[in-house]
Length: 169
Image (cartoon, rainbow, N blue to C red; front, top):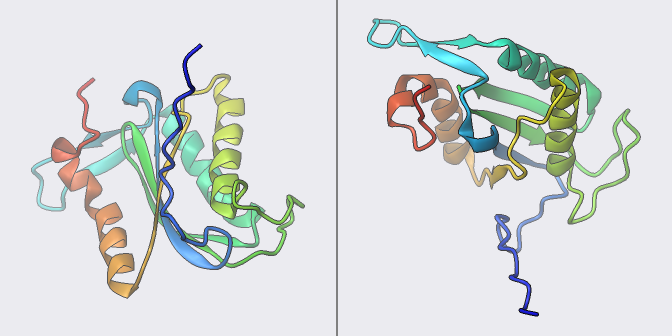
């Protein structure tokens, strides 16, 4: 029997995922299916708009509700693209929220709980799982990084056709 392959962690080595900080999250749909939204109005002066599909409307509802569900998380910005979501969250620290979930460990960070809870709520309403197993996160390092990522969220619909996650359906 061969050795099991060690899974590569997407986490920044030595980074603190437990205490206060700002994180840029990307959550993708399975097989990058375009089931969340459509980008409409490309080429118009005000730029394209995101038109949420039924799954995207449910995702939008739970992103907004998670702001209230977790006292230790604040959503600073997000965009629901056709096959992925970008969310900027501010994590306030190690305290338990009203969900009474345990204080996070390295494997059970506040960010991981946020993503897991978000996916679970959405999937329950969808009646199936539409999300990829993993999500990506980026620790915001400074004010410039923060502003760059917020701009990225705002401008993402304008660049949809050039996005690495772009897919026609």
